Amino acid sequence: MFIIQPAGLAHTRYAEIISQEMEESAKARGTGIAKRSPEYLINKMLEGKSIIALTKTGDWAGFCYIEAWGHGKFVANSGLIVAPPFRRSGLAREIKKEIFKLSRKKYPESKIFGLTTGAAVMKINSELGYFPVSYSDLTDDEEFWKGCQSCVNYEILKTKNRQNCICTAMLYVPKNADKKKKELALRMDFGKDLRLFERWTRLKRYVMLNLKKTKNKTLNLF
Image 1: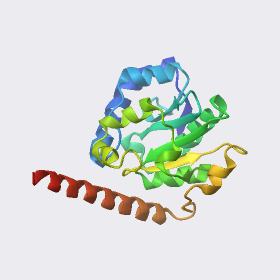
Image 2 (image 1 turned 60 degrees about the vertical axis):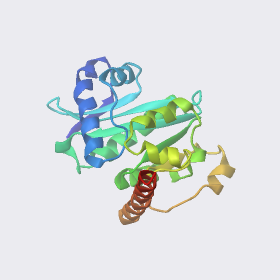
Image 3 (image 1 turned 120 degrees about the vertical axis):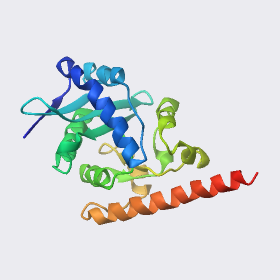
Image 4 (image 1 turned 90 degrees about the vertical axis):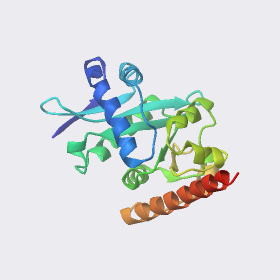
């Protein structure tokens, strides 16, 4: 049904619609990075650091891209988006698999991490070998964290001194690398039951948003 492949020059014409859909989806969820510009997405396509999914008739169906941080020590698969008509079709899982393969090919020694509020994405990550970790296990590259400034929940991240937020952090560590850290990392076995992901994301969202409301009320008293 879909053609899933690395994006290139021929696909740059889709950058505008992908950028718009990213923004609209973030608004609808009430979480996440608000937008990536068409120019930013075009650069990812031309660098060979993105995956695009098209229908057999040439309509855009999905997209995801790679970002490298900390001089390539960390890699993130970012901006996963599926066009509304094709959601709940299993396409997101297929795109995640392909961008994961591309990341491993381009950065075989790098740790791959993600921040997500989506239960379905968390489950897919778990199937690929990611596990939940604390924010301190992620890159300390300031450029990465600057990207969170356009998120509607950035104030929560600041309040938590960049150690927690609504998103769940997940990390993939290449085999034989950082075994001790992997063994000590916080683990949650979500692999077999999507309901565990959904309960976790609902609980975290509830706690974090209530903390945000409490802080706002306190500030309004002064």
